[in-house]
Length: 399
Ligand SMILES: Nc1nc2c(ncn2[C@@H]2O[C@H](COP(=O)(O)OP(=O)(O)OP(=O)(O)O)[C@@H](O)[C@H]2O)c(=O)[nH]1
Ligand SMILES: [Mg+2]
Image (tube, rainbow, N blue to C red; front, side, top):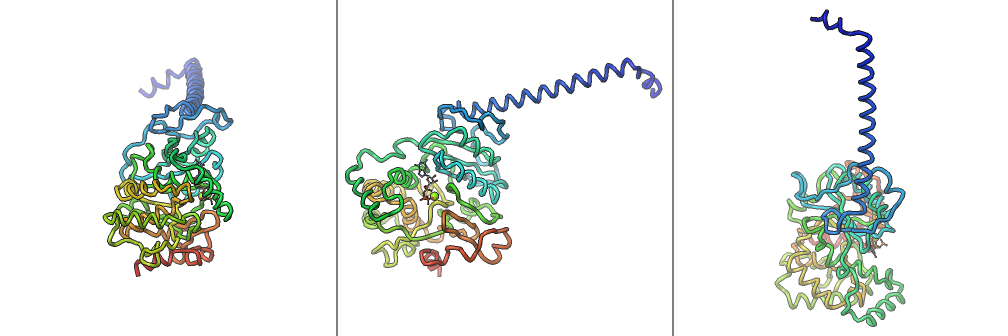
């Protein structure tokens, strides 16, 4: 056998085999090139031509060509709907409201979250905007994660100042806050954003399927590895609201908010939890608001809490007062007061181990948590126990 096999290796056959090999290599290279081209075409289709109703992308932007869009995209570009959470994950997502112009800060924030937590978990990202996201925005975001990414546009009614708002009164309110030099005092878009985050984001079609969310904002930074899944912790421990930083609101922005809260409590005592955290938001058993709130640029929370009858009734009541436009009610005090009144105090969670910075304020853990999680912040500059922090009030709820 062996002998006859060697006997057939003639020079002619060697040439034939060589030719066949060269042809195969050529074919393989050609196929690889075509699939690259196909990937770019598919990618640019998913950037620009996804119908508005598709669950992966309700951001039906008019196609705008950009240099970035002609580059091949990574395999993380998803063009299929993301349905049930795979086993091992909670039913949760990141939520990121942003303008196209925020892209640099958005990219930095996504990278930070991915590096410190999500690249090990793969939770999806939902981006929302009152305008269409540009191709460049979507391209840059998709480069940063292997998780599914969804881009959505916000309906006009959920964003714009309602017609029934008395614009003359609203204008006077804006001028008043401007004269007091209150940040964003004269801004209508900022008010739209606060109202949207208070009453509408959890109703957006892209968020319907999820229960828990983690809110992320442009430019925020995470300084420690997160060694566990906070969504699963929230679920297992029946938490509804989680925060990292708490502080005092500008009084002028919420001048009549507490009056409205008191009226609501009087009309709907059934919504107040007997084990509430009223003492976090009031130092005199409810007579006045002490201005404390959880800083909502970071939130890990349960959207079913916002969707439930208590919060729905509360938001409708506040909305009817018009304070989102006549004053400048923030989503942070609105969420915080609701969590403090309608949840059990032990359902509100301080994420001591999540090191986080937004603008000038940062929370940085000390001690064992710092060393164990490769933290890079400075515990000495943590906002926790400074004069304008409300953390001690929160801790006192449990002492
Ligand atoms: N799409 C859209 N997003 C907005 C608009 N205004 C604010 N946002 C987003 O809403 C979030 C909060 O807005 P910010 O401007 O960061 O408000 P802030 O955190 O109170 O103030 P900063 O200290 O400036 O960060 C961010 O994620 C913004 O990107 C807007 O007009 N359109
Ligand atoms: Mg911000």
